[in-house]
Length: 292
Image (cartoon, rainbow, N blue to C red; front, side, top):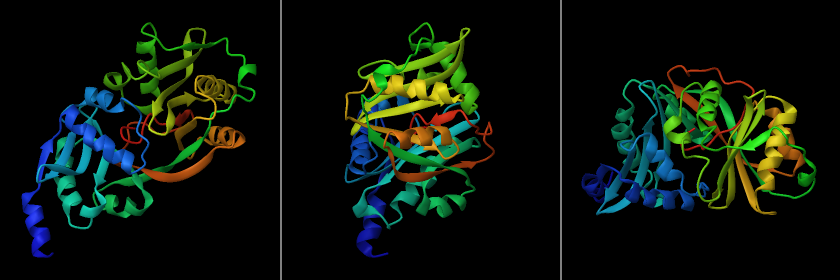
């Protein structure tokens, strides 16, 4: 390493970020074309406000990483970004070693780009499946024809049931994330219910490039289609719509194909430690790659 790089490394400070400071990272994510959802960051901080780390050089943010502890057993890594001009100098690795300590002995999940899969494996992470970033345009075609008598908007009277249903799918409770996830400007959620039991749900919110859908759960093909069309009906026609769909959700992938959606890239869902649930059909789109 040359002396200039060594000097820069010595001057780098790693700090726990406040929500206001983290807005710089949200902008970094936009520059990386991650298409963050509007307002997601404040909801992420509701989960663990000490799990967001920034590396600074001369007072300017140059790298970031989130290690968010959902509970005493489970954590999720996201927002691992190094500005392009500072890559290859060990800055990201130094941040990684510092921030990952926050998870302690918890099971840790992350979504890795394929070229980094081997590097994460060196830290004990194992790949379980691929997740496809799929994007298309909202269309009014046939949307008005869908009959959805069992679909209702998520409100304060149903949010606790939604949190419990979410936990039954992914294996751990996310009450601090989901309590406000479906509420606010351009954020909504819908549930499909039968005999007062939730059979599926879908969330949508505005994002940097249009709208994001997630979480999205349903097992029955008709429920999947009805929920998707309900969400699309809420989105301005021709707006871009993005979902992060696990590879085993083939019914959803086929549905999106029929609407002209296409895959942008894929990530590898990886865990250090054994996941708390075996992922199965019914998980049709993640809430976010940044927090699972």
